[in-house]
Image (cartoon, rainbow, N blue to C red; front, side, top):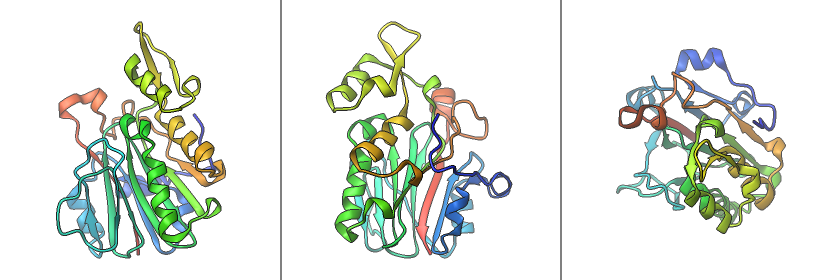
Length: 242
C-alpha cells in the first residue's frame, strides 16, 4: 500500500489521546486534526476541544459537500464539509469508509470528507476541492491531503455491480480492483481510488498526500462494520482551524 509523503503516526500521542495524527501536520500552528480510535467518543471530543464548535453531518454516502461560514443552525445532510472559519471542528464518522482531510496551507481552508465506495465512485473529493478552489483559488501546490484508517483492499470484497459503476464513471478499474474469492466479486482499494482522483484528476503531487495506513477490519482498536456489523461503533475523525 502506498504511503505518500512519508507520514509518521504519533503512536505515543495516539495511545494517550486515542486518535492518530500525521506528525508533519503538527507543525502547522493553526491546524488541529485527528483520526479517532474506538475509545475516543463524542464526550472526549467535546471535552478536549472545548474551544471549538463540533459540526457533524447526517452522512448519506453521497457526493454532497457543504461550505460553512458559521455555526450551522439546522441539521446538515451530506458527506463533506469545507470551512475557512476558525473555531469550527469538522467531523466525519467512519467504520470502514475512508476519512480524508484537505488542507490549503496558504489560504487556511480545511475540509473533512467521508469517502465510502459510493462517494468515491461519485468523486466526492473532487467536489470538495472544487469548492476550496472557488473560495480561495487554491492551487495544487498549496494543498495537502490526509487519509485516515479504512478497510484495506485485502479485506474489502464487493460485487460486480460496484466494479461496473466505477468503470462507467471513468476509473482505471485495473488499478483499484483485484479478483475476489467468489465468482463475480472483486477486492476494492478505496485508498488507491481516492489517491488516483487526487493525483490524476486534481493534479496533486503524491508528496502532498499523507496516509495513516491502518486497516479498520484488522485492527481491534478501530471500529469495522465488515467485522462487527450492527455492533460496530463509529470512529470520529476531526479537523479544524484554531
